[in-house]
Image (cartoon, rainbow, N blue to C red):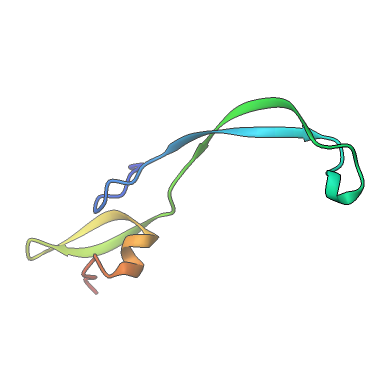
Length: 76
């Protein structure tokens, strides 16, 4: 399965997972400290959809944002 939206081209994004220790100041602690960072991947919410493309039915991977925005003409 493709990992990008075939309408807008949205794909995976790299980010850090941050681990913290301590209690927040507003909760009565002395503050939060970052103890470690680990790599992670944020993936888009892709759905397989039957769509009309150039007059033919085709199954494509589309993100939910494009489906909600009405950028895809569904083929039932």
